[in-house]
Amino acid sequence: MPASHRLGDENRGFVQVMQGFDFSRALIGLQVLAVARVSLEETWAHVAQREAFGKPLSAFQGVSHPLADLDTQVEAARLLCLQALWLKDRGLPHSAEAAMCKWWAPKLAYETVHQCLLMHGHGGYDRGPMEQRLRDVLGFQIGDGTAQIMKTIIARARAGRSAVPS
Image (cartoon, rainbow, N blue to C red; front, side, top):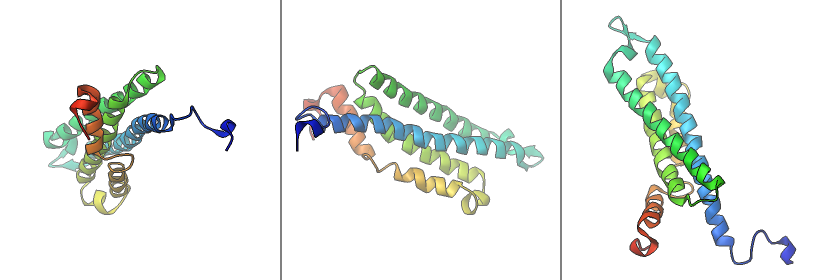
């Protein structure tokens, strides 16, 4: 095949693929966090409207505090993903940040959607989009590298490759 058909520099293919993974890992984080965000918005509306003992469910700390915790974490994870992309745009190292996005965001999205499903009660389990979202975000914990691989990437970036062997 002629050199004119080659993508990128010779003998740099592996590095280019790995850099592509860094980009996609941050994007995966944003994808699953969008699902978490929509689930939270719907759940906040649900618990503000649904009543128990003459009060909206949101009046009970056992309902509102877990949602507030998840809301905070989803926002923090979103900012981490945006930071990874910001670093990429400036040509700065961002493998560790991208790996953080890839392992944490899908795990957090799963926990968020799961909690939202529970807040909707039986209706969240057998009707509506929550149960489908739960399955969808679970798959992202596997694709593009598992949490264990992502944590190894982070450790190598922080401690050095020789300090964290394969």
